[in-house]
Image (cartoon, rainbow, N blue to C red; front, side, top):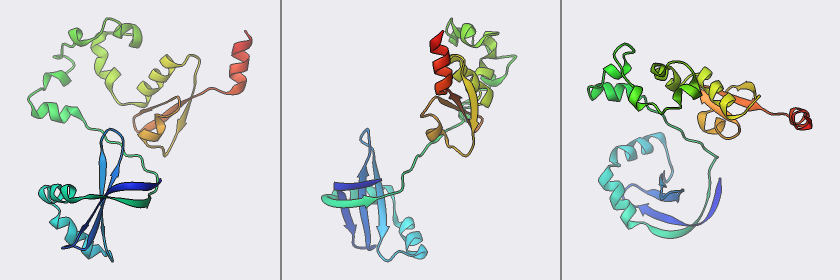
Length: 184
């Protein structure tokens, strides 16, 4: 990524650190702290001095400055297991097959879409490669599934792909298949 335009900038004199605000979509800004003559020791020292109050102080003092920035392209993704969070809140029976009653939560077409008993919702919601394949096959008829390795979730979800069980699965639709299909 290369950008050249006005961005929030501040020079933190006490620590000899340049601070740059790089704007992203949806009013999100990434603040980059760049120590002058950076060493591992200086970065560690600076980290211990950065607090929420200090960041707020720096952000309020920033001025717009014309800058050129070059960054490698990044995709950041995050996931959280709600099972642990909900169990900490006292929700245990939701995860017990014999005790959970989720029938009222399910839409009427859940059994049509996923087949089987509506109590199998826990299986449908699991982050598995099989569920990712099932989702693709429901979205794209006669799709040929291909597994792609070493691809993160953000990159995977771009083109006719689904992500499950830490695996990217994609629907391959070749030109020959389309021509053959459209001929009939």
